[in-house]
Length: 88
Ligand SMILES: [Zn+2]
Image (cartoon, rainbow, N blue to C red; front, side):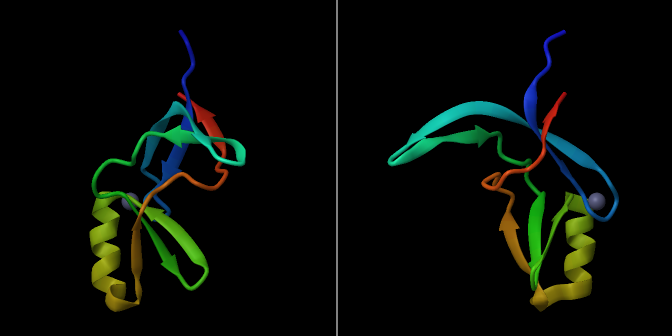
């Protein structure tokens, strides 16, 4: 069975994870091509609290938001920084 390249995003609260497939590269001007990964499914978000960053699954996103409300900055998960490359 062929192994698939991608990154695994893990919920920092409950440990649920989602595998985002590697989709290839996109050319960039003046630098090496950018690696493109599948988008995280709806509901998965990345939160930043001061400098702390966490990925949260849809269920935990809701709970976390109730608790911390306005202090949160919610962002879509975009694989733009090196994460550990996984295979599935
Ligand atoms: Zn979770």
